Image (cartoon, rainbow, N blue to C red):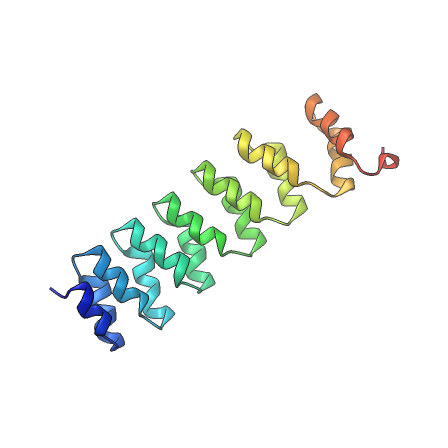
Length: 173
C-alpha cells in the first residue's frame, strides 16, 4: 500500500484519484484527495468516502461545486458533513428546505442562520417545533410588515405579544 509520505510526492492526477478512492488509510485517502485539482474527481470522494471525517474535510477545504454541495447538504448520513456543505450554500430556497426538513437540529439551526429570505424565516419561526430553530428564526425577522402580520394574526398569544414588542413601526398596527 502507498504511504502518506509517498502520496506527498505524487503529482499525477489519475494516480492521486485512485489512491484517494482505494487506499485503506483515511489519512492517505485524504492526503491524496487534497491534491486533486478537478472537482469532477473530487466530488465522488467527498460524497462517498467511508470516513465522515474525510468527507467533512473535503467539503470544507476543497469542494466548490454547488450542485454537489447541495446534494451532500441534503443527503449525507453525517450531520457534520451536512453542516460543512450548508456553510457554503447561498441558494435561499435550498437553505429554507434544509432548515425545515433536516433530521438534525444543529444542521437546521445553521441553515436558518444562513437564510436571508424573510418570508422563509417567518414560516420557520411560525411552524418549527424545535425551540432552538424557532427562536433563531424568530430573532432574525426584521421586516416590520412581517412582524405586523404575526402581531395581528398569529394564533399564539405569546407570538403576537413578542411581535408587537419587536415592531419598529408601531403605526403599522
